[in-house]
Length: 239
Length: 239
DNA sequence: GAACACAACTGGTCATACCACTTGACCACC
DNA sequence: GGTGGTCAAGTGGTATGACCAGTTGTGTTC
Image (cartoon, rainbow over all chains, first blue to last red):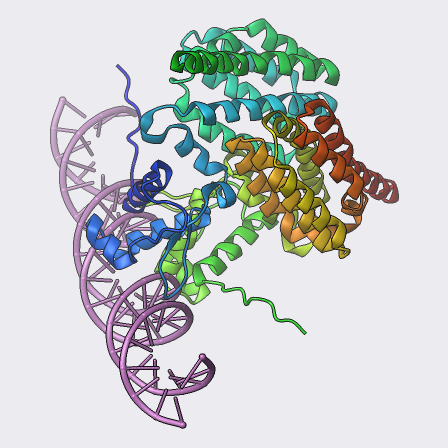
């Protein structure tokens, strides 16, 4: 019997999720006006500062446009949103959006090999990488393995010494983490190939950038292909 | 004589920038405690709600950790920050951080060809892309040209039909835009090659993914090389 | 039709009060 | 010595009300 940390939810966070959910689900569309802060506060049964905090957060996430004296309007997520919206697009209403999942896996596939190559050029630390591989191997739970794989990639992206890739990784990880369980079938063929991770760690620590790129690509393309295959099956079932 | 739009700066935004500046400059380091909301409000001569809004924003940007009843502490930007921190890292105190600039250009170089390839597979719209190329050609101002090139790439990333890449593009653009002038020397060799953009638009609209990838890589690697060259010169001057 | 004034409404900021939680100190009990 | 309980002081979280700043629509005047 274990106890998990209790997740605290502040009122502005609840308001943020409510409004964001309406935007993502399409109930609130681009250009549409939100109720005033006062009206929203009354409707949601919270104070106006709570609504303000949520709206400011939505503003900085690029999801709404606020004008003093005027109505707050919904922005075009794709034009102005940032990576932190991605988790909400991936699991709208709790179900996996396959197109979003595909785009995440495509992005990983584009970035992973380059990051691995840079890490090899800039020399990752052998001990930490091998420890991370062992951690993947040791964890037999599908979700746990994915977490361990993420920890491995965190070390790789740190070794790449690129702040842009590092911050991107943070955003992609944040998107992916809520979907670990939903994606575990698709990801199994990747995270179960421990020897591949080990070889990648080896290539990085010996500075073999070409091999690192190739191995990373091999490793990451499996899940992308599995998802595309699942998408094809879905398309087929639809006809 | 033209007039530019007056940029409104809210008080919470000013507080956010103040605190973020301290974090980015290293005056406030990882794990360090910030003053309480009340103390900070008094020190900055603003109300507590303004400070709250700024701190909540810093929290959601992954830059500080707030605990009810306890002190707000500075987080590790690289571990928890998102892409929206990137502009602040690129131009800390107004001067270009070359390592950050390099990482942005490396990221572009990794992503651009893949996005171009996807756009070709998924067929970008010819007219819009060619209009965008004409806009690049027509604008002779170095900064303006870069803006037009960004508009071109926006069309490309839209044609790629990948929300993950699209949102990433938004973040990278936001990082890059404040540094257009500072980077214009490095970028000139790229944005001045209009015929290259035209060929890329052609490859995308005819669905030639391999050519699109190659052209995108050629196009984007120039600035990366120019910057690396500048970095080498700086290294040499330091010895 | 253009310019102006005004009212109503919106967002922006502040002050104050109170609640919820954390931390440290101290005490009691086993 | 270790555990649990209580209390005070300080922190963040929330609400209310007031007022300021900006926007929009309407009516009036020229």
